[in-house]
Image 1 (cartoon, rainbow, N blue to C red):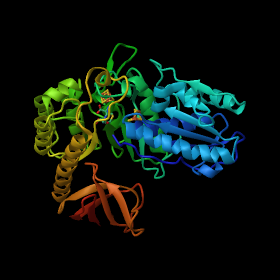
Image 2 (image 1 turned 60 degrees about the vertical axis):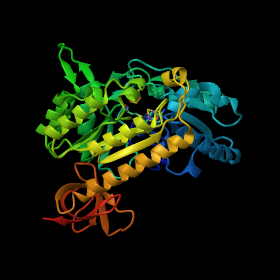
Image 3 (image 1 turned 180 degrees about the vertical axis):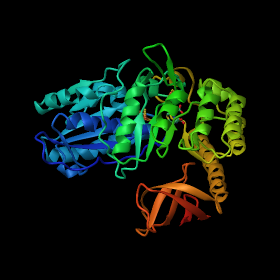
Image 4 (image 1 turned 90 degrees about the vertical axis):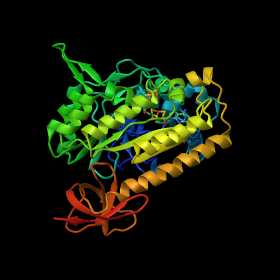
Length: 458
Ligand code: SAH
Ligand code: SF4
Ligand code: F3S
């Protein structure tokens, strides 16, 4: 999953009567998707959206607790908002999302910092909480739900490109990886009614979208029982979405290795519009560490899943997440991580230093005993290795031709577009006669560490 990005919200609309809302989003794609649900709820309650902080009557920050530095960043932003509030005392500041859920009413301990707090399952209550705040009271709702999926809400898309959209298919997580705060801040896993997913995807197509990414913390455990007793598994859902329109690109994230079935891989092989990319977080290459992490698989099992992907989907790119310096990790464990990365030949990775999260199983039972310098050194080695692997992965594409979905104008040159291949690699190429949202064939001429450079072919 994409981590710790941050974005201002969509567009300005001054015609409605309630205040103007500015939303800033941190954390994973689920949070990006949730901010779109929040925007929808507030819009239908008479609020308008603004992407400019200095126009805001309400500032909402959708937060992440996954690592300590994710929270530090939010505290920094809250300080900035406090200064803004000093100049504009009627402005309401709200904390949404995972950090709100974790720290609850402790946000109110600091004077004039935060007016409302809403956890990830409490967004329908936001209009009520905002009204309380307008009356000068603090508003909080951090109840987690076993049912809430916001299935009936049509998210207001806050992205700028109008080409690619996130669609949440489930919420929460039941896995209890020992290092992870997500089950505590997002609650129990629940799947969303597939009919509402299909309906949302159809609406996106009608609005011109060409790609959807189905989101969940562990999409492979998606399941929905239909009225006649039949079961919609993730493989089945993938098929239902892929069949809606053969020109719609379908992606998904995240796959948990213990639950990635051959059936899902075979479904991917059957539909050309399901993209050839799997994000399969490994976390560690040492079976001993994986056990302490409570990941539910061994090194060998993970390797077996990679082999299955290579067998069933020979063109498929694989990306991963790695944690350096988990409790009791030795240099030998670390070398196993490096050797597994080398063996799997990952195309891309998100890499992190272990950060102890309060009240998780690891925090309660396992000492955070790897010194910070050691974590940092191991992380540097992991990043260096992945740098080489990512570069090789791009080099092997030079000379080949890929179908690319154009997502926007290159940041570096307004004469160039950027888009992605099915394997999720970014390609930059001269614009020609094409436009944003088009599928074009691009021959790859060379690669840089971050992108592929190409030209369109007919
Ligand atoms: N549900 C996804 C991951 C969600 S969190 C999955 O299971 O794969 C995204 C990534 O953050 C994780 O894959 C892990 O690599 C990292 N992460 C989670 N908790 C962490 C912690 N306490 N310290 C460092 N990295 C962590
Ligand atoms: Fe966290 Fe594990 Fe759930 Fe992913 S699967 S969100 S790492 S508990
Ligand atoms: Fe996502 Fe961060 Fe919450 S990774 S689920 S926003 S803790």
